[in-house]
Structure formats: C-alpha cells, structure tokens
Amino acid sequence: MKWLLVILSAMLLVTQYRLWVGEGSLAEATRLKRQLAQQQEKNAALARENRQLLREVRSLKEGTDGVEAKARYDLGLIKEGETLFIFLDADEGKE
Image (cartoon, rainbow, N blue to C red; front, side, top):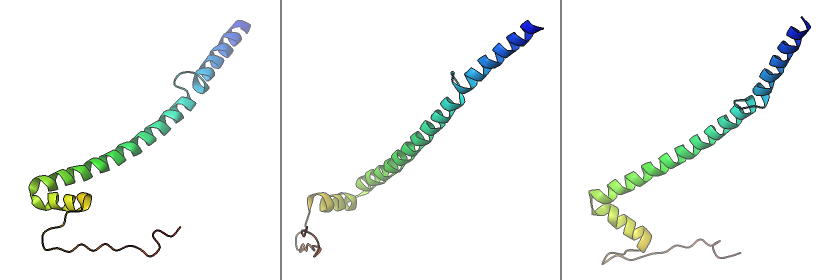
C-alpha cells in the first residue's frame, strides 16, 4: 500500500509539472494567446493598408483623374492656366 501511495504521488507531481512548467503548460498557452492577439492586430493593419493600396491602384487604372491627383499631390503638378497658392500656418517655422 505504501508503494502505491508513492507511485500515485510521483504521478501527481509529474502531471503537475507538465501543467505548470512543461510543454503545453498554462504559461505557454498564455504566451501563445498573447502572440496570437499581436499577430492578429498586425494582420488587420496590413489588411487595411492592402485595401487602401488596391483602391489607389484601381483609381490609377480607371482614368486620368487618379494619375492627375497623384501627380498633383506627389509632384506638385500645375495645369496650364492654373495658379498655385501655398498657405502656411502662422505657427509653422516658429520653434
């Protein structure tokens, strides 16, 4: 009977060790859940960025309006007969 108690106690300790410290432990499960949440946030941000880029690509493919808007914004395109006005904030440049 004494040996049975020793064996059962040893099995309990081994089981508890795996639960708290070993592979598949509660701590590892918590860490993996945290990693999963972080990766899902990154994936969502990348999906938003991809949707924005797809909208931009469609806009550029559909006509000259998208290309013209991109050139105006990125390259400062001014059409013939247009006048460019640049407004600066009064606070800008004062530091």
